Image (cartoon, rainbow, N blue to C red; front, side, top):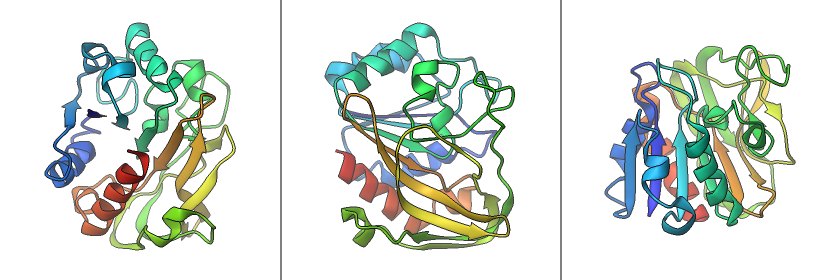
Length: 218
C-alpha cells in the first residue's frame, strides 16, 4: 500500500490534483485529504510501502496530528522505509522535535519551536532545472518551466545532509526544489517542493517527475 495524505492547502487542493493525475498508475495507492485518522487506521509499519505527504500541521483550520498519529509515522520510518514530502510537507509534523530533525530541508513555520527564522514563498514565474549532480535521478527528472506565478518555497532550514536534485533561480537567488536525504534508520527522504496552483500541480512535467520519484522510492 502507498498512502498519500494531504491537506486542502487553502482550497488549492495540490495533493488532490496530484493524486487524480497519478491514481491510474498506482492501483495500491490510498488517498486521504484533511483526515489525519488514517495514520492510525492502518499499521503503517507493516502495511504501508511508501508514505507520501502534502500537508502542513496546524494549517487550513485543521488540527495538529495527535501524538498517537505522529508515533505511527515514526514507527513506519523506524523500519527503514522511505518518505516523499511534497510542497510544505517537511512541516507535516512540525510540532514534534524528532520529525523536525530528519526531513532534510525544513519549511520553517512562524514562531518555530527551535527559534529558526521562518521560511517564505515569493510568487513569480520560475524554471525548475535538474541540478548538476551525479545521481541516478539526474537523467530521469525533467525541467519544468512555469510561466504563471506560483509559490516558490525559499529559505528552508537544512537539518540533515542533502543531495540537491533540482533547483530554481529567481530574483532572490537559487533555491533547491528537490532533494534527497536519509532518516536515522536508513530510509530515503525526498523533498519535492514545486506546486501550489492547479495549473502547476497538474502540469504533465510535474506529474512525470512525481511518478519518477514514486517509482524510485517504491
